[in-house]
Length: 272
Image (tube, rainbow, N blue to C red; front, side):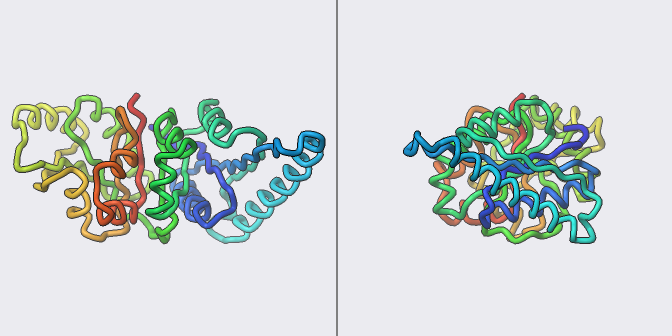
C-alpha cells in the first residue's frame, strides 16, 4: 500500500457501517483517496415469480440511500472535497464484496464489525471471515463500539518474520500520510527472544530509520493490550498469515482481551 488512492467501504446502513465510513473519510482527507461505498442486496429467492421486480425496487431504494449518504457527507465542511462514489450490486454479499476488492481498483477496504458477541459470530461466519482471510488489499477493521478518535499512533506488531519487513516499510509511508507516530513492536513472550533473529531483523528495518521496540508479556495479545494501556488513538497493524488475526484472537483469548483489543482499529495486511 505505497499510496492510498481508492478506499472501498461496504455499507449496510447499520451503526457498524457508520464508524467505518468515518474512518474512511478521515483517511481520505490525509491521503487524497477516493471513497467508494458498496451496498450488496441478495435476491429474495422465496419469491421467484416477482424476483426481478422486487430486486429492481430494492436496488433503486438502496441507490437513493447511497446518494443521500454521499450528499450528507459532502455537507460536512471537512469532507466537502473528498471524491465519493456509490454502487449497488446484486448477489451473495461476501462474494460480491470480494470480487469487487479483487478488481484491482482499491488500495484499502474499511469494514465495520459487531460488538464482542456479534464479532464471535462474524468471525466464525462466512462473510467477514472470508473478507479478512482472502482480501488482497489491507483491511481496516473497526468494531461498532469504537467511537471515532483521531489516530495518533500506528503500531506495527511483528513476530520478527522476514516477510514483515516489506509491510513495515509500506506502513511507514501510510503513517506519514496520516501524520501519526509510527512504532514497530515485538512482544517478548515469557522473556524469550532469539537475539540473532532480532539483530538480523533490526538490521533490515534500520534501512528505514526504524528499530524494534521490545515488550515483555505472557502472550502476544496480552502484550498488545498491556502496551496500549487503554489508548484508543492507536491503530494496531499486523500481517495476516494462515488465519485471520481476529479468528486467532477469538479462539485464543479471554473475553477481556477480545473487548480491549477491539476497542481500537485493526489494520490487517495480506500475507502477500
